Length: 130
Figure (cartoon, rainbow, N blue to C red):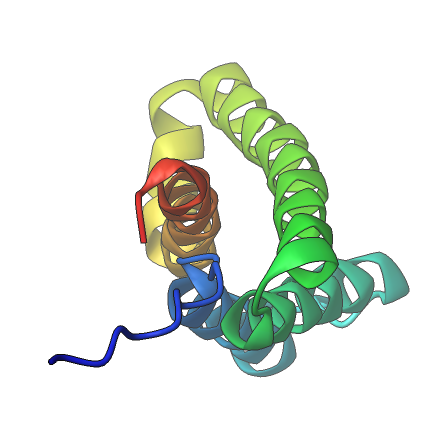
């Protein structure tokens, strides 16, 4: 007779990806981008890092729901920032694109996209049968 395993508690995915993206964004604002350590930038970066930790350690029930809502909130803020970046690039034309690529800001934008992918992984993990 085989003993049955207890069902595993639900987890939310994408935490590691979100955490890495937050660390990359904080490092870019601190080390590379001139004038990048504004309170709003640091606040967004730290909220992404906290969200990554929440997503990593959430197990079952309310903690998974909290991690998912945090991921959703951070992703919405991230989309607003991405929209502003792309609007600024479009307004600058080819010189705006050149400045964007040469300034190293593309690394932060890549990290922002990683946050959005982390949210999508979290969304998929909620509907995965475990």
